[in-house]
Image (cartoon, rainbow, N blue to C red; front, top):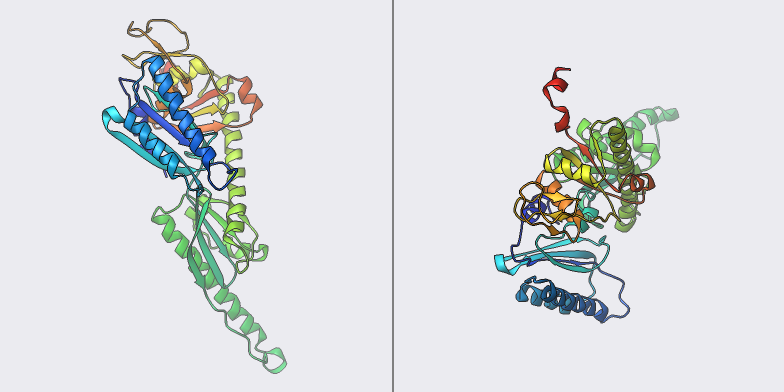
Length: 387
């Protein structure tokens, strides 16, 4: 698991000798049990990086590339997760992270900065999720992260059994039924208390409930306000027969729907704010200006976004105009191999949210890159403040 703190540290890293290596491994379904295709692909990527480095004057560490080749040989087919490695032999850095298997492809890049855009598909899009599967007497609590589900707590509260008779003319039946209902409510309260303890301890961000429809109202009325805020949704499953894989699939579908709803809402908000000349920036030049001024609250980048730009190695200014000298300090500029990396780096260094926008035609027409702003520096003039 990679944290935002680790990402921010990687985003701040620079290699004066262009020796920063970014390696991404995305597992694929193997053609045979030997998994040689993956090993061969990684070896080819290393050879290509060495060839391009010699041509472009880059200096990837030979020991770093050798360690990646060793990794290729160790592949054993147990690839439930992807992997990211960030290395720079010249500065003694090697960081390795396991990731959900949601990367676009296996890739290796050598540059001045680390290539971080692929992480947009997994960072902030995979919250830690608690899944509670319960009925009136039995509950199972799961942890879900990165396509992996883990059964962490099992709670069984036996309900009182009815005797062979409900008494004369059923006189005791109502009392017994009320007693059973009270025990069921105590069970639900016990389950939710355990969940609340885990939430207070910071063990999850999102909550999903699995239960039959007929007991949802009993659960809902006992939810703590903090748990209500954390709930993503609910699904219907039988606690006794549901497999962890079925629970995971139901929960991931709800998380996917939530992410898509949030993406659509953010795109609509940003484009609307931009049209009103408010807290929305649309297009590469406008977004770059906002990032450099520290205005950005959330950066939105389309999955297919590409654009040309130059960077000043001296002051860090990024410009869409491919001028030979920096507009800020007059130093010589250099072309960026992927301007999206510069955008992501700016966003991480300024603690902005990262959102990868997938399959949104309206967003693509608007330039495929945008930002929701915390404020507009150009509107904080004395005249604006006075008005």
